[in-house]
Structures are given as C-alpha cells and as structure tokens.
Length: 325
Image 1 (cartoon, rainbow, N blue to C red):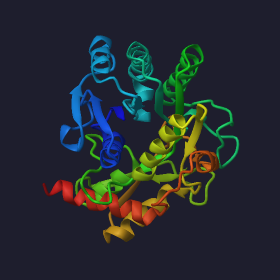
Image 2 (cartoon, rainbow, N blue to C red; image 1 turned 45 degrees about the vertical axis):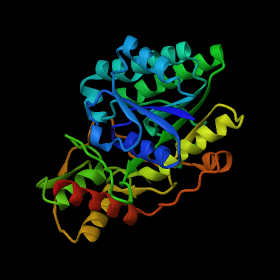
Image 3 (tube, rainbow, N blue to C red; image 1 turned 180 degrees about the vertical axis):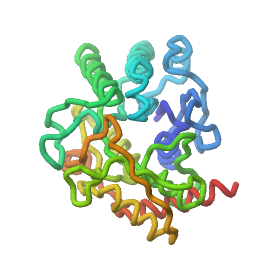
C-alpha cells in the first residue's frame, strides 16, 4: 500500500514514516523542510514541496498515486500563531485545502489528519471528550478547527473517508534512538527542559504560576510520539476495513503540572537546573487532559509507553546523542 506523509521530515511525521517503513508500506514524504530535515526520513523518498504550491503538490500525488494520505504538515507554535495569525490560517488551512484538491485529482480515498486538543480551547470538563464544545483561544487552534471543517465538508461532497486525530502534548523520541525531536526555537516543555538539562539553554521559564491547579502551573496530558503514530496507523486500518469517518482524542487521560514535569526531568537527568517564572503566555488554557476511550474501543489503540519517566528518558537520550553528533 502506498502512503503519502505530509510533514514527514518533521518531528511526528518522521516517526510515522519510520513506523510505516518498518511495517512494509510504500511511503513517500512531502515536506518543505521549514522545520524538518532530510536525514530523519528513514524510509521511502522525499519530495521537497510546499503545500501552498498546488501545482507541485498535484504533480506529486498524480505521480505517486497514494492509497492514503497522512497529513502532519502544519505550523504548530501557539505563541507564534498569536503574533502571526494570518501565517497560520494560510499555512494550516489553505495547505489542507490544496491537499484535498490534489487528493481529489489523484483519486485518493483515505485521509488521516493531524489535529490538536487546542480546538477545545478552555474545556468545560476534564477529561475532554470528542463531542465537547470546540472553542479555540488561539489562531493555531482555529486554523486546525477550520481545516477539520474543510475535511468534513469535502468528505460529505466526495465520499472520501477521514480520521481526525486530536492529540494533546506529544513528547519523547524513538526508543531505538534513530530519530527524535529537533527544533530551532523549541516551545514544548519536555524538549526545552531536556535542552536545559543538557546545557544548551541556561534556564527554563514557567509561564504562569497562578492557575487554579495544585501548584499553580498548567496541566497537560503527555503522549509518547510512537504511541501517537501507532494511533494513526490504527485509524488508517480502521478506515480501510470499512470503518466510518470519525474524530478521536489521543492522550493518556492523565495530566501533569508544568512543575511536576520539570521536577521529573531533573530527577531523570540528575541535573538541578535553574527555573524562572514569567507571566502567563497568551493562548494557553489552564488544563488539557484527554478522554481517549473512543480511540481505544473503536481503533483498538493500545498505548505501549504510558509513563512520564520513559517519555523523558527517550527525549533525554536523543538530545544527548544529537548534540554529540
């Protein structure tokens, strides 16, 4: 089976390409390399194409003729989206629209879409269920929600089958150490914390310590990147087997505060690094924890790495390996 992966040279996409390649799939990566790197595409070919370039994108799909597309390509930094909202609407929404049009021309019938818990905004209850209200509080979340709407409407008019995966905080790295997360300007907590622990950043900032939580810091649900990729594969198999299009939360259903994560990184790394406090960051909800019952029941998704310490160890091992290259 031929699978096209957009954003396959990036963090999550490269882990997905690895999983597909090891599973014997014929995989092609499409990436503009704004965040990704060719060296992390371990299987299949790489085509350097921006989704905003419709003609180039259409050419790739018509040539490769994929049976399915797994769509990761997007800008994902919440603070940046607040400062540059139109960049996010253009890249995340219009890129998805171009992809849908190219899929139609190439006759592709299955789409797995990488969405986000940011579509929920500030949830009314915890853990969050898929049917809960969607009311993003930042342009990143809105850009993903609008893309979801475009996919649903496109499916209604064409019959394409889709799975929308809303995931929470993705972290960690390939347990085998072949690939991991690389970012020029990291914003994810665990990545920043391990960079501080390895001496690449002098200190870590905590944005807001006055939330209504046990220690005043935000709560997040952290899911290991390989478990997340496994959920994408289960979703694809579900659709191919005749399953209905649907939306699925992907998380572990357990939240940790920012300070709990930082303290665990200190414990695992054995480095007592500096922590500084700053004001709340615009666009951050106080807490986000997933109810992933639906994914477990319908997709038969069975997480393997549901352990914060393991997630941090894989991230730390990768960081130490990467900086020593």
